[in-house]
Length: 97
Image (cartoon, rainbow, N blue to C red; front, side, top):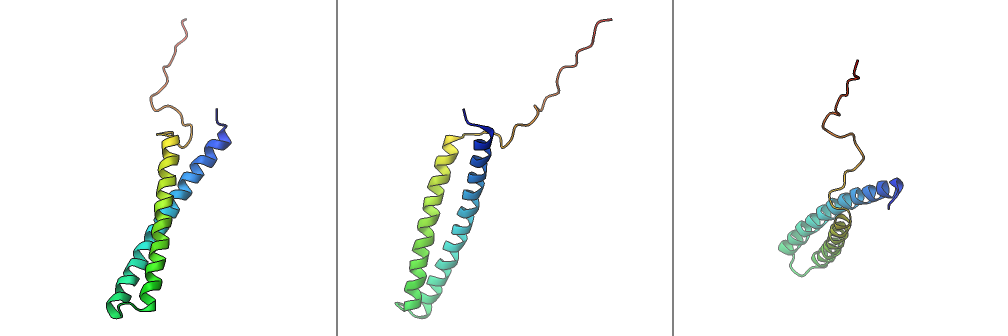
């Protein structure tokens, strides 16, 4: 059984992977735009190939992060982020007089 500390670290790791996935997706989009722009102005130029190389790096990082995130979520399906009180009210018991 995992300790409460392990669960908190797991939740933090998932949150960090989601943030990194967003960052890598943004980087991939920006480098794709840069590669297209450089390719439009000067096809085959060094600037275009550098942009393509960075696009490949960011796409690979995005793919690896997505795979890791999918695996981590499969390990902990639909667990609550914290232990909260139940949503339904508890039964009130009245003492017999």
